[in-house]
Length: 406
Image (cartoon, rainbow, N blue to C red; front, side, top):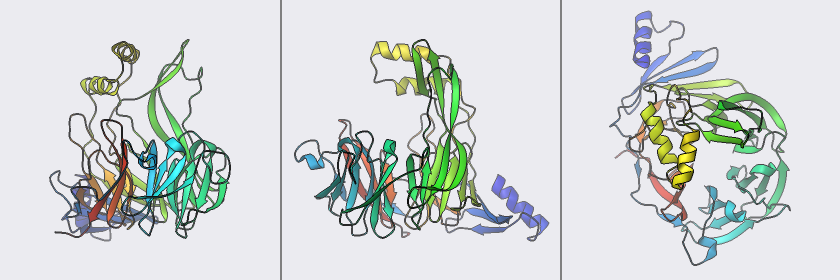
């Protein structure tokens, strides 16, 4: 194993050998090696055993669940894109289906509605907006309007403060840094008649913008998701590649994470674009089989009519296999500066656990999070996310998190 080999090499060569650092053992008993390379901190982590769990505990049920099938329309959620908890316990929900921010108290009771459909100050467009809500310095909230490139700032009382535009072509607010700078990204776009038929992987460009939306530092282009493109006399039809890789972008304290999940490697940069930290963890590299691929497509298009499904699968007969599965799934950061990385869910296996790293990048252990929960935010003592039941009813839920070891 890479980590063990590195530890052994450092021991044999002596602790002062170039490239060697401190071998440390976390409270979980896992080994990590931290070293410095030209001012960049590199942390190599042993992989936790599959049956080990960090002592933190998630409650068996949520203490707050917002959402209803019928009754008061303020509780009927539709196209929830994001949610955030304010310091006083209120929960702000980005309900894109009505172009609103809906505000609920700490127990889930509806309090207020901010924004609405329109082009005026503090209003949102009619497609996928508001897309996100992010804490803004000074107990305010930043809400983004995805395709209009607008970011609106609301005070804790709901008063609209100001709206600014992200500089073209950056359209997506990824996160907000502690000093008010924003982490932004571009869209992945396809133009009919220019692609042909085959697999493509479009780049996504990222930048750090100032508090007013102007670009402070361009961070360059990074590979996004693979797509299988069919571009013929019927037009262009992009399909998701089976087991596609993804771009990874997240604010981590005063750093930003940007890269992809091709390898188990998290790269963190300063707001000036300098590489500051690399976090690695051992993992098994596996390749999808044709059986994995075909089963994935069968499941992906299972809800289509028999005729539509047969036509789609026939179109995708020549979709190539990817060489490897992604190294990991989603990446989140929490209020304490910890890094949460979801293991990739392999075909036929149950929902995977998450690996938790401390603020320095050393692995602590594995944690199981509520299944079928799209997680928006991890706070000091809670997890906030969205669930959707079999009837399509969306609910925003808060699950207590106990970080003390039993």
